[in-house]
Image (cartoon, rainbow, N blue to C red; front, side):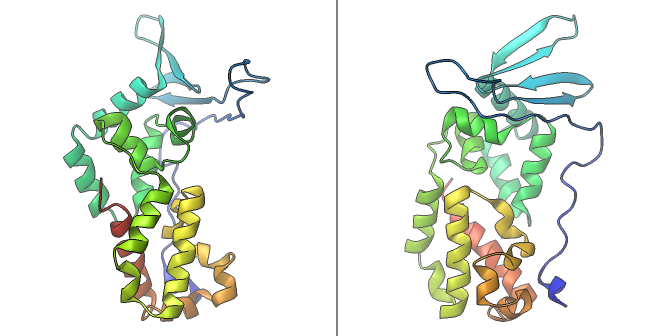
Amino acid sequence: DEGMVGEDTPDPSGEGEPQEILVQPPGPPGEGPTGPEPRRKIRIDGVAVTILLERVEYMDEHGKLVTESLRDYSRKTILKEYASLDEFLRSWNSADRKRAILDEMESQGLAFDILGQDVNPELDAFDLICHVAYGQPPLTRKQRAAKVLNNGFFSKHGVEARAVLQALLDRYADAGQFDIEDPAVLHQKPFNEIGKPLEIARLFGGPEGYKKAIRELEASLYSAA
């Protein structure tokens, strides 16, 4: 059964009110947008919040329109969930699925895709959190991937297993995709050219060995905050 490689990814939307989402590309910088700004409309605790490229708008309890910078709003939202960097890192490092933490933060009003456009599109969500909320110097995805290549992590595995891990690392570096945690990614290129998911898992000693290798890969990626 190829489904043994991992568990189904839970629905990231969770419970609560449905979210209305509209995201559109920005126009040329410095000349004004050719269309609507990238925006996301959500409801948080019953309050309608509009997240734009550089600012956030919502009505306060007095019915007054509040506008604040996207970075300030994001910082407040992160700190409400994790008051300190140490608290965030403990949660991040202990989580079996990093994506679950990000899904929860997005449900509270974080828009990592829009924030990334504002701060630096080469950063992943982890570095956006550490930089925007806690003032940490960030590493780009490619810098984090290069760190893994240089710290001896790959030497633990055989040639074929290293090819799988390298492809996962490339996927992360190019797009910052946290689907490296999802075994369904093994059905896609280039993994489906290496073998079926269960065959790939056997390169790591079986499904549990594969999951362990993914956790170790992420630990290596985020060993420097």
